Length: 563
Image (tube, rainbow, N blue to C red):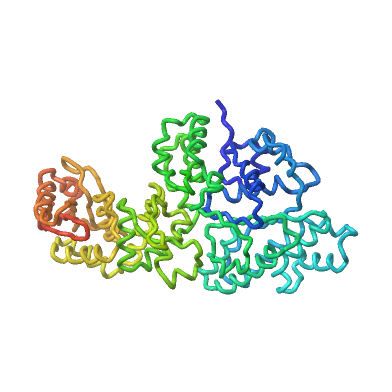
């Protein structure tokens, strides 16, 4: 049976419908928005949760166009409500996305803003032919469209366009601004946050505050940047964050929508695996799946790929907020990250009105950033006096992998070459005392992931001994009568090699015996066999045991061979 194509990366509602892509119907958002009657609506959701597609849907529904777009909604849920379909195609719409404002300097970012505004003006250049518009207004319009206007003119450019369109259509304007906080996040990391804040604040204040030409506005982003920072004096702003139940079902896939998707593509048998990887988000009271990752995973299943469930979401961003958490964490924060990775909820406050600058003032704010950007999930809350505290966990396997990979990358980047050389030398020469001291030092200084204990420690040591040009690291390879954990061996001169066997225990007093068991396993299973076949002359043997952040190493000596 031939299925509809999956809309991976398709963010234009018209293109999605015209080309017959599979569509999870979110059109009742239009009905709820009209019933809501709020003037300025801000929806904050993590990236890749359908914000841009929903904004495109709103544009195609409300925008007055020469050729009707009503057919796009035939058979969709909103079509069952003729009283709301009457609003289709009835308004001038200003639609701007700020997601491309990721430049390295304020000058370049402002140039991009001018370009975005100019393109939006060009979409409406029909007004230049109208007698309703004054010549002076046309001149301003033309200058902005051709990017010849003074810089200050662009601060009011959205308001100016709304006034001109309202006059031309004799109807108030709907303003849609997608990914409003992308330029703020970028500016924070690039070092011009204050300048960008001033630009966005000025543009929003003129367009959204006491604008008689405004019917209503919809903004999307990951965060609600504090009212004092961006939305100064904007008393008509209504924010729908992931903690709010209203509109909670319109971003991401609900459980019912997920079941329908799996039935449509005959993949019901994978429901549990997909849920483990991509479910776990909670918007208001609604359980939500990550739509980007789900669609990519389903596509992989349909293509019969060897591995279908992967961290697709992590490949769409640099995950800079998690990197910052790891890099700048104090001992308390490190402990909380370890709790999260090991499946224990953290208990903390959440601040909905945040700015990127607040991370530098109070590290506790970073948990709010992680929640609103999709890296944490609320499971419960309690109010103590006038303060509310939340229990939060990592949502799913995909997000946990981002934390663990970020920690691993940070660790490798921060272990200096000299320290790693000392570790390699102690491995090759079976210097148990020195190796134990070095490993314990790094275990103490890094964030540990004990949820998959032996895998974590295995990766920890592998990272320390990898990357030396003269040596090869081999993991979990058959040799003798079993599989060794790790072998380090010289590449071109067959002098030195080392066999490392790992054990993990729950109690410190079990560590010495576990090391001895590891050495006995190396001997009994003859892990040296493949190295003897390759004629290595000196083979070191090490039994290494881990318990939380402690390590014990015992040496089995170095066996010498002549060939």
